[in-house]
Image 1: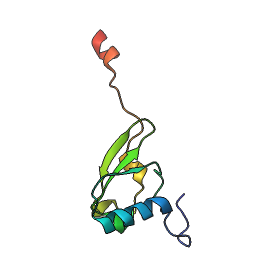
Image 2 (image 1 turned 90 degrees about the vertical axis):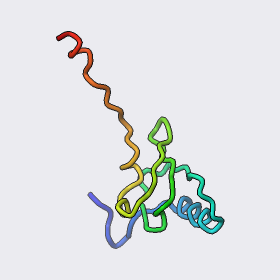
Image 3 (image 1 turned 45 degrees about the vertical axis):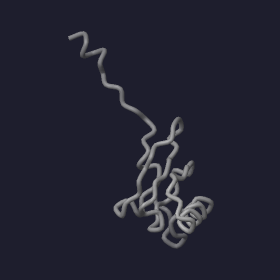
Image 4 (image 1 turned 120 degrees about the vertical axis):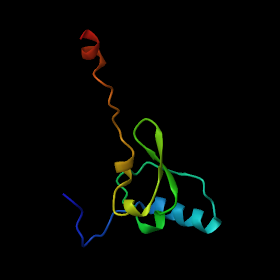
Length: 90
């Protein structure tokens, strides 16, 4: 179920302030993000974020196509390890 349109998108306030501050200073360093549920807004375009996936930080460069999506969508939490044991028996 999606968030109510009456409420608007969820944007982490601390993260939004960090982006505004970095833009004003002209700082291009990646910003660390723990809020995977934060919605990407147009102000984030062109910035690099380090999104935490529970174990490590994954670099995510935000483009126009990502606006409206969540930060966590671009930082997978599970890594697939192929079924090598079964293939090795054959």
